[in-house]
Length: 163
Image (cartoon, rainbow, N blue to C red; front, side, top):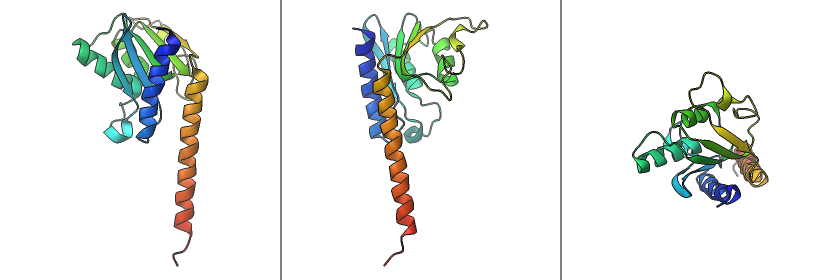
């Protein structure tokens, strides 16, 4: 399969996150052309600030593989990883990360630095971005637009007097 085909599956994971009112980010871990892990954002529903899509996919893969290392694996994620997720990716020894949309505020692969190429790391990760970026960006835009509309409606409801 191509990077675009794998990313389309990560986007499906992001749809699951959105359906649970979580920020729509999804991830798929692939090794030797097989999905070994998948996940989507769920920090709110899991009451766990570490429950990002990448972490969920890594946990899933490690359980399935019976190993905390995933050499040779490729992670497909719909949003540029943050520093927490980038650290987990390095510790898991993932070989490659492919992401869709950039994250200007907290993305650490290109937006706020090139973490994976830091001199002090004992494992280097190849990374590339922009795969189905428009689709992932639109998914995020629609989600946040919906949330803003819901907040606005709630605010209007609390202002209107009961009759």
